[in-house]
Length: 351
Image (cartoon, rainbow, N blue to C red):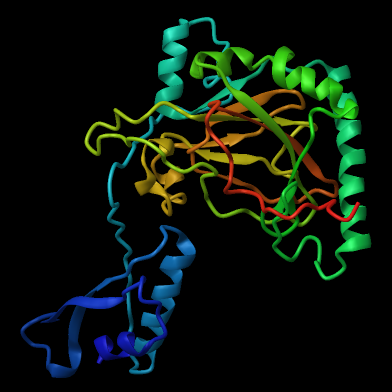
């Protein structure tokens, strides 16, 4: 009956919920037929997150309740490939700092290849940060005014959209590309190409040269937690499932630099360390905390965090009363072209 009930539910084909094993057993020899226990194993293909577990459990419990039965459910996750394990030692922005004096350059590169993320605690100076923040505020105002005047059919902050210059990243979260060749971005252009404290990271990881694009990623008050995701696809060899080694070096390194001090209230970016090694971990982001591989990128204004473009991450909720502006510097191999994260229609096409 339970198998028939599950089959009748409106699952998608990919989820493939089915009873794979059912065993009836009496609690004791004295029990009669009405006091039997039933162990049921249900296969359920899903993303590894608590909401998916709860969804299946609710449906099974509801079915049991219609028969006056009690149900206990335990969820076991079987990963499809390499499963990284973290250390019991706490991971902090200090332990991930590229500028640590106790490492050689080779050890820094090796540490990044393993973790997929590094911080740069040497901050951009306050005057430069302030100048760029003010330019960013003017830019955001101009973008939002453009939507209000020319795209009234789009509810900004609710509807999903993708233009050549800007894309929505979930409710109240946006990613807007800047044109570094414009004079208004001269200070940002110099920072991205020449003056950035994180240049040593990028040069060490991409010794054959790079291109850079910059965008403003900002979350307005009320933005919720994002789903775990990777911005970059796996384009080359992935790691050995037994050792976690052998994955291709990065073709892209992304740097986040907040323009305000981040906190639990403003939100931040959370990273799943070592998840850049294989595409098989996509969908298992919620396992990062269980595996002790979650890093909370709570940084001061002007500090930065660099990560492999294939690394799983998510933006956290903004529970403050102000925007959370972050600069995103995407350094890529010269031959790489970004086609995934933006649209083809120009926001300014009629101007």
